[in-house]
Length: 538
Image (cartoon, rainbow, N blue to C red):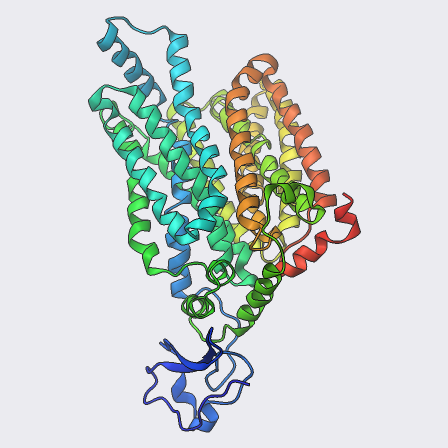
């Protein structure tokens, strides 16, 4: 048993606590821990204040309740989420508003070089690559997530990932003054790479620094910032702000702001305690990180859980891609993670957003009012994601996924019939409601849960590789939908909603029968679910 010397007492409440910790050489030594804000003065005597305990960290006077969101944890969440998912959302939506201006720039650049204007088809081809190259960069970044997460760590990986942002800002910001649309395309690739890597590293870091009872809420922060950043890009893209012929390069270069914020704030935060202990074997550093994040020295329960996982990892071989695909205990959670990513991208959200302006104008709204209605839709997306952040720890992941997917399925079927009978006056207004309702259903669960669910389904050894594969599937699906949606729309028109309804129906059935509820469960408890006969034979 580890003991605190009876002759030790703090001089004043702000002093450091000292606890015994066994080093690598087997000898016991003191470990200094910060003790800011602990109510030491409530202890009536040193014997009341300090007592024997079998945990590696000793407690002050009274037992401290499970930690919530402390100021330092909030800083770590903000540094990781705002500096990473903002890039993902902002650069997804930022090119929509200046599309006509950038197409004009491409045409004028070609005229300056050759003395001839481009055909419309060639402009469309170059513009399509300008948009879709973002997804190509995202796929590359996603595939490297596992390697970078293991080699550099979650925190250092996020910090170094700001280098592609700087390159992208230079290329995009100076593309117009240099008369090169190739610079614009290259910049979109680099910012896509950054976003793809962020989509894997940030949810992983958020899941590993959050208390178990807040894991879902903290994980939802990634999607919340994505929705906020999409809305910000739509607002900044207005003609009254940066959506003008001379200012659109500044609109694209504004992506440097979240990168600067992350570079300034993330170094103040610790590395993921799980990575520090399970990957690097540094228990004292992991203990310090947990103490910093929780704002208390009462972290022995979490440390015990991580130690158990660490011992289990040491007895298991390194997870390879072959084992990931062949082992039933790993293959099934990987299939679930990938299916949830596909459910997000193949839900029809892009189709509904594409039709939204057309639906708003058919209801009698002029172009400016329709644009405002689109901003209102983005605002609803943000609000409902905030609601999801609260509900995910109450209702659970599976329940919210089923709720969102079911609502979207019913919605797209009704929207199809509304578009078919749009000549009837009141139907157009029903269509407006259905568009907004679809976004609300998407934000309630399918928009946010897939990002952090993959981190919950896997233990530390398999998590980086599984995240790489699942996030890459998400970006590939995004790329395929982006390339195929317009041609598909040209072939079947509004019947595309029937296709999405069928896909949503499939994802509802899959979620109901195969996706486990992970709310409030430890990694070991979740892993045990997949060792059961029903999952391994599924």
